[in-house]
Image (cartoon, rainbow, N blue to C red; front, side, top):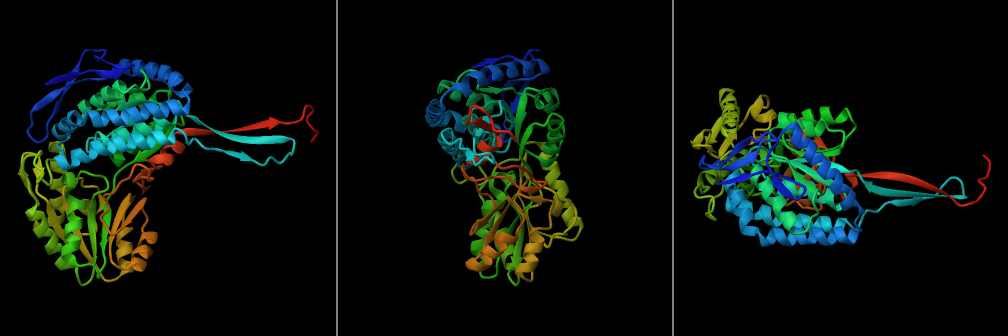
Length: 481
């Protein structure tokens, strides 16, 4: 069992009030360790550190930042087992998911290292021929990263590495459910040579340290991955001081299965999109929209696949899913399933708690197109299947949401698949697979209540830099108007 402090200016420090809070393993309920419980005083300390870190980090030439970020990637890989096992324990991830997170984290830092050299801008033709117009790109300053519990290593890494590549300093406020992995990552990055103050971590609760960080006048940008409700709250705070916002929020993502696609094969793909990490992924496939006449056949195939998924030791390669993060999450999933059942939907499999915080993979056929199960993000292993008569109706159902994060399309007909991809209103569409996809260079984000802005590669760099127009007079005596 370990006790972690905040990570500020290159070392762990206790909370100013000396308080800690426990981090639990969702699979077993055991206490893994304790983290510092952040206060407004800790926020001030971290901000001061980040301001000092920004002055040093932003002044480094791009090739120096590139070298350091490449060393960060190498050190993540060097501490693969250390990160892997803490991630499994603290977030309830299977070994397959945890392995993906660690490897993706290293990949993201390599991608960010390359972006450090590509802070491109422009020269512009000036209306006055004796003047030259330049556009330069400059880092914002100090950026706040608020990271979630569901993929607590990789999503934190992605939110910090690209702002760092652009020359910003970053303060992370991780989810109170998964504080230990964030401090562990900070130790690994510091060991790789990231300068003190360039990256700081303040652990604790939203009202006590998260909102004070979001309000702080020295914070010039905020990246948040989390629920839509949290994003709205942080957005309301941030807009008062015109902070730059990048919000990756909830989703109720559709998977379209066109009639040319074999139902059993589609079910194999859909199960990965719906049930990975117990459905606790913002891009999980939740609404399966199947072209007639294959709706029932697909739903039954998906139910059989759900029943076959292995549940066991999270370090067993066969284990397909694990627990939800806490009891509140379990109760929310139960409410959604019960509402669908009471509205007349057919529960083909699942629909209840397996044990502890583990919820059964659930398939609901003919769900009501109103109520929480269709309209709200469930964030659990629940797949709803509905049949549509035509491609037009499928697209209309896909767009029947306040969210617009991701979508998948299963078809062998490229023309129909691309037709649908262009008409679905969401931030990413994946033809030939499910909706749960990512890439460190791709622009991840959504329409509507799924967020603001895009993260990944140059899109993150552009988001967390300012453009400045500089004009240069080329003649000693300016011409009159």
